Image (cartoon, rainbow, N blue to C red):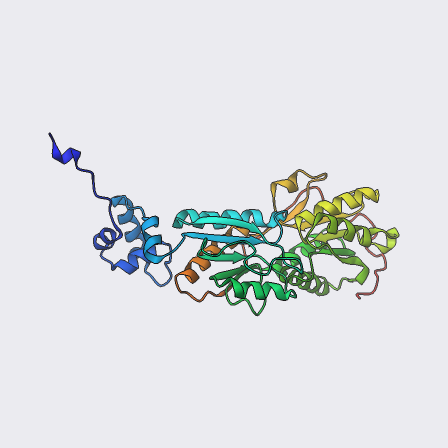
Amino acid sequence: MDTARSTPRRRPTLRDVAAAAGVDLSTASRLLRNHTDGYRRDTVDRVVRVAAELGYRPNTQARALRLRRQQAIAMLVPDLDNFGFTEVLRGIQDICEEEGFTLLLSEVRAGPHSPRHDPANLAGRVDGALVAFATVDDPQVGQWLHQLDLPTVMVQRGAPDALACVVLDEEGNAGLMVEHLAGLGHRRIGHVSGSLTTDTALRRQQGFDDAMGARGLPIPPAWTADSGFTFAGGHAATLAIMSRREDQRPTALAVDSLVSALGCLTALRELDLRVPDDVSVITIDEHVMAAQTTPPLTTIKVPQRKLGHRAARMLLDVIEGGTGDRVVIDGPTEIIVRQSTAPYRRDPSERLPSRR
């Protein structure tokens, strides 16, 4: 009997990788978890190459037992209908797959009727949580996070109380909507905002106001309405803005979210207003759904997947004892131009209302 062939090959360990690459054990561990800040590029490449050559695969079960970890993280969102979470979740899942973590997704609504203690039943099930509650005036959110007693990273909340958070450049994203519409000759631009109790919507509102102000364009209060980031809210906000005489309403609408833009299109049809002949519409959040509307929607494509990557990496670092940071993802961003926006077709010398 050939004993050499019958003896199973020993699984390479992290110690084997470290020895072969000429680095210490902790360095090999960090680099193979993609924590490369502060390390030379040739060191990173050498460790990764040696691990591949040896066929090293991390033993996540053993690591979890050693550290008393669940090897799982949670993503808590306030609304599963929001298209803006789709690519963020894909980005988080990318990192979870790389690091051997399971991702749990839960919709947890904030507000007076939400549970006060561990509403997602996370205790003992996950090592940390990514929290997408962006509400800035609901005391239950802060109370619940304190009771949760887990490493957390806020996603899309840049409020001062969020010590570990990753957000998008929402001021810039809203400014791009104004830039596109103004570039088409529109001077009467309305704003279907998100929920103005949220950090995301407040920053988009500020970006919209700044971009309009920089161009000397008016922002009558009647041309701005809160959609709450919902279909029904987008519908109601659009009716409120556009149910007026032609010379007293906007010729273009900047809408803060794709789901609100779907409600906006429905309302415009009910008002017998044609898009883009009577009014142009642009929104934030690129999704396959945007190309399926009538007409297809022009969108601002924001780096949602990159946001998910960075947030997940930060949470895993906080789980390992890190303190987190306040990070703004500022690109790449692009405008996906479709048929819902078109050049302004009327007299550009018409009289505009006062700025406020």
